[in-house]
Image (cartoon, rainbow, N blue to C red; front, side, top):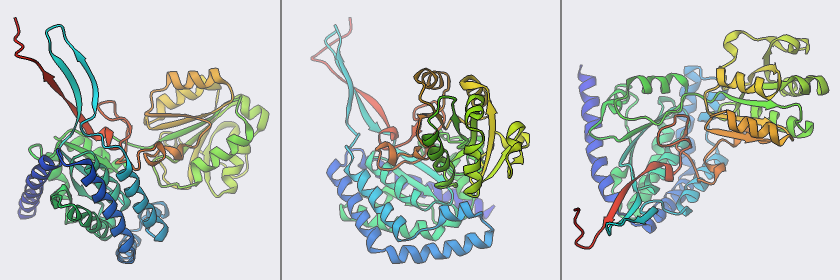
Length: 421
């Protein structure tokens, strides 16, 4: 009981401080926020050695926990990834500030002038696993959009996240902004997560970023509204009218570039017409690259393919494993994706405009692509500088959640002694 009480008190204290910081951030100038993020980027580079040392502790902890190679890859930081974190901070800093944007405005016959204007959400809680770079991405995007944020990183990234968070605080202090604008929960105790999910007086929205277990828990237990991102069960469909060279390049990249990210291809769908024309070349490429391919039917004629179970379709492997299936045309692909997909990202490989249009029109995933790798499902690649996650729900934010998606709006109404008859 004592631990639960302490967790409750911790989150209430952090929440109250975040509320106060959010009130100040709502009118903080765009210039101050930009300079704070640029200073944070400078700090990340200046403290690269300390961050890498802290990450070494986390890597040892992850190894002891038996994390998979893909999860260890998510966790690992080196000089190039630290430089990428700094680059992401600068990219967010350079973006146009969304707060105060007039979304639309109009005049009424009554004499009222009405504006709909972007405003911060308030206090955002971000709960995430493994990837320490989320500390920087989430902190930067929340600050840019005028929100205070309470970050709760995974236990395996505890030291790395603290080192990166210290750099964000340097940025805030450089501009005299409240340090409570970006807070990091200072404990691995899971009771803090439970308290965040119940903190309706202090947190306006929760953003979970992690595996199915974490996100499912958040959705089941949260009393605070949630930006949902359940799983990245991403499909690539090779249509009969696909260009072979393009298809080979995209499929290999979609699966193998980084297997542990939510935009990695988890299921390859091959049109019967493509199979009849090109055989199993796409599957053979994956096998040669070291991917375990699980299929059924004609795909089992390819040496190295293992028989798929029913559970392999609709599964997020996050590893060098991929399900595969032959389908009957674009409608067969659509039917499969509707049944097994998670509404994250799907890609069609085709030179047929009509097939692409049908795929785009009849599927409702957050991101639909044509002749492009699903690994592009990333806010940075969408020009957002970074992302706080990929939302697969349909309320408020959908797809990559950047600074603009972390705002709501209010109405500003101007009259001239105007009264209602």
